[in-house]
Image (cartoon, rainbow, N blue to C red; front, side, top):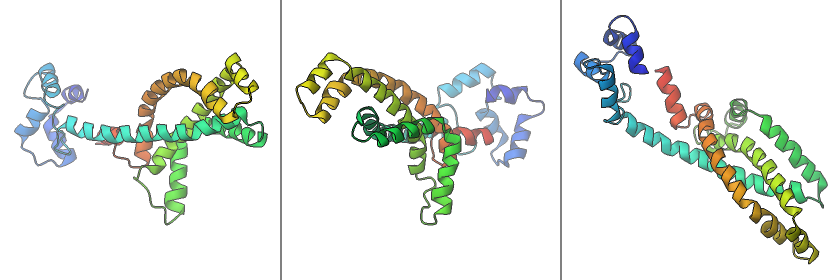
Length: 239
């Protein structure tokens, strides 16, 4: 798309590039890297077969730069997913079988409804203001911790509701009621006769949500200066 726009705009694209970026590269080099010395499709195919071409800004192969960023995006999304599961599992069990502490179960359900409605684009700057600006000793901008929490909070709320629904469905099955009737330990019954049978369906949902989470990291990465694909994408558009 960038190559198509360069060719469609009026005037000499090399002169425009030098004027806007102050590039000191020879015109011949810029012309070759932009593919202006060959046809449109040959230039695109040349890029695809040569690491997506050379970045005019960082002077690195585009593919090499993207792969380095991809690793950080995968790290952030995977960490957020694990944190969300660590929050959702005990919360779902408490909300579903919190007979002894109904108040805690009600609080969990209410907080999960609130967390689902909070967009990351709003929650991220709030967390950043509270923990990196208002608290002097909490200078953690760019560390990824707040980015991970921002992604994990709404995801944990969604998982808490999904797991609660599955646990309640399994708890009505005959084998679960039989285990309770035999006087088995309540925690063992929940883990073995409720959570384990629901594991297959939950894993299937986990895969689809992880893919969606990769897309959701883009805005959060930009907010917290996390050097992933999202930040690279936004920087490329600005440049």
